[in-house]
Image (cartoon, rainbow, N blue to C red; front, side):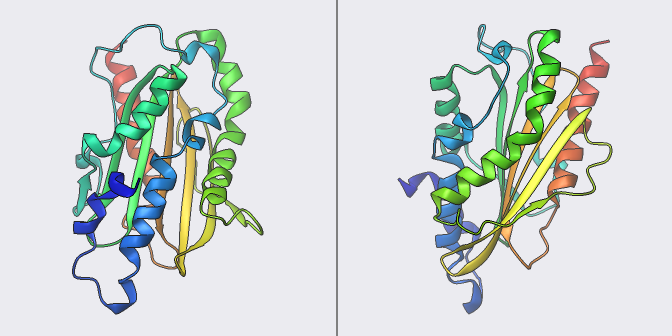
Length: 227
């Protein structure tokens, strides 16, 4: 089951003794994020996101150019579990992306969805505040840390999307303090969800908020080009 996280074996070479457990941490958390049903089943999305045919046009998404040096794209084969989940749920997902930092344990996973009907925008906005919370709770449950879970609302969300919500949790995985953030936002009729994992107590290479801003810039640019 952990074969989906093979990318981390190379990412974590050369660590000092205090980071020897990091490959195990990365494998478990990648599997928790990408290989389990909660990523999709906890989402409460409008019915207009149900697939209505294959998306063929180029769509805006987060890219390596949006991230600091040192990140690597998670191979398509490693993202397959996420895409399979969406396919089983028949959700109309435009893009799925994943990146890992080669010098530290930071994993970014996310996806974008297009709302087909303008009337469903309000429905999504009503559901949005609960999306990140449901996701981190499900992930915490998978790694056995749902008891005494301390949820930390994400701050500095100004300027991200037309509507945004985010929350983080502190977990203990394989004896290492770990942070998982989940953030969802809507920009016009596109919805983006980002899950970010990194070691708690160590500054991430890029914050969850800045990742969201760079993705939002992509979505904003795509919307402007269509006008």
